[in-house]
Length: 440
Ligand code: 4AD
Ligand code: MG
Image 1 (cartoon, protein in one colour):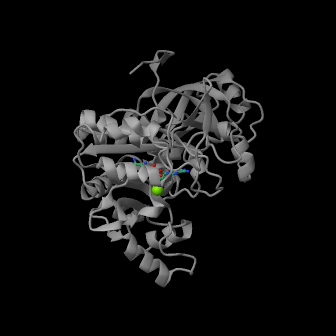
Image 2 (image 1 turned 120 degrees about the horizontal axis):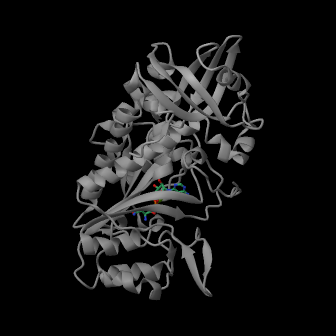
Image 3 (image 1 turned 45 degrees about the vertical axis):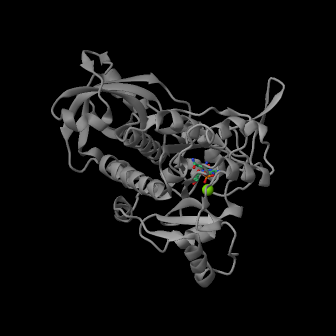
């Protein structure tokens, strides 16, 4: 830990103030809000780890400090030292009695105030909106999820081996590719690191890649970003059942971790944690695409066509039938990617799986067992009209010690949205990239 001192005191994060009751501490942050009553100034100070109330009493600190507190505007930056006192009524259970307050910078009139702002305004001020309580809570939970993901794989001998962002080939269909000019050669931003993860899995056995992925999605839904983060485990000698078992172990572990470590943030978000508890328990229900299609035909609004992919309302309907995520497996090959392995018992199906979150959050995972047979894979590449040349390296994996293998991709922002109970993906990544948004 880097130690920072000011007036002989070591800096403490607000989150850890409870550990310092009765002690003098240094807090550095921004003025979140202020109320004044003559000789008392109630300052709500935030530092990104939490918010604490500091009650400045005239006479209890140097006059210039009291005056500085009085004059301070919303979002002014400050340093203060003071004694931590326990107070059950206070958020976080403690308050500070300041002995020194110093303004670091006087904020200009802050554009985001207590009043309700429209989404367009907030998105235009995303760089400042991030400072609000709810947005900070979402990003803390996002960080907790990222840490849980890395720990989960580390503990199970999966090595993190990242895939490139520039690629010469398409992984998830050719309609959502972002083209870039790569020194005069056409290239694309990656839609998924999977194909490269298959190669690294043949080298290291169990791997995952975790990074941004790009899709030129023309849809303006609350579930689509053009740049999103995906974590993609891939393992040699995994069949579809192994992939599903890994996926439910993974998701239930992530949910448990957030419930355990981020109760305060979930409370800020007013998340109904009882509903999340169910998702910490495995097994998750598993149904085939055909069973799911039957449910949608019988109970849906008539918009579902058997043989086609699910739309958002269909995923919502399926997700709401269960208290925890549901795994939908064995899909018609026409609607899934070329690399999925054919079901040996049903050549019209592939061994793919989607995980659909409850409460209307839709698909959070897409995965499969991969086609490991050279000739069948070649046939699929031809069928899809893909350029065989650019897949030549990928085909090599089926030439030199091919093994059954599989994996999946979990969309980070969709998972964050579900766990936080936030409706729109734009609040689940610091700076969202969408159809009509690339600023700030
Ligand atoms: O189902 P998808 O397209 O699967 C793949 O890309 C596989 N190659 C992954 C693999 O097997 N290694 O995408 C995986 C997940 C989805 O379930 C969803 O959570 C998320 O990525 N996702 C998006 N998230 C935000 N915005 C978008 N436009 C997304 N498209 C997919
Ligand atoms: Mg999918």
